[in-house]
Image 1 (cartoon, rainbow, N blue to C red):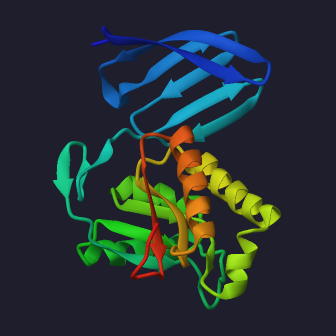
Image 2 (cartoon, one colour; image 1 turned 180 degrees about the vertical axis):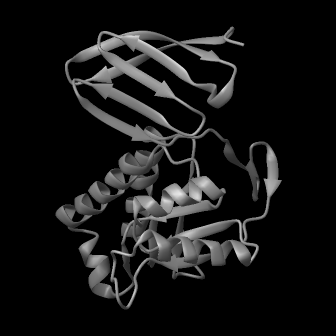
Length: 231
């Protein structure tokens, strides 16, 4: 009916500076939120956020949910859930790593038909289209970077600061790209390294700190090939 139901004061950061704006949320079709301040148009729906500035525009989907653990249990929006899912590689014999949306959608729909509620992106960040579709259909998502290894030379590599810095750079880039996707509930640190090594523990501690400093709304996880001694 056009009556304001909420007012939120926030900060919109742009290259030219910081602009403060009041954003009003109205009831009605689409629950559209608009604020025009100093040439910026901020349009917010439940599923899309768009910013237009100086003739340039960016639209991204957002969503809101909580994910947490209590003991060994996982809670989504306050409700305990059991994660049932599969690992999925995003590669095709004809299309390679550039799969079209139709094939991505087919994979995700098959996973949902299996009554899964989660998917692990093995073992590298998949297309943004994939994460967008998981947002749309409500499939929970574990995203990770391509870090793997359990041979002696891998242990030596973890002592190389240049090598470790490349790992940390990829990890931060992944989180920066996909921070707004609510389907992502896990930031995956790595896949099947020998976590009994002291070098692995040092790497894990650094990555968890980076993740928690950047994003407190998600869990962290990893896969290990060490079944007896773990970090």
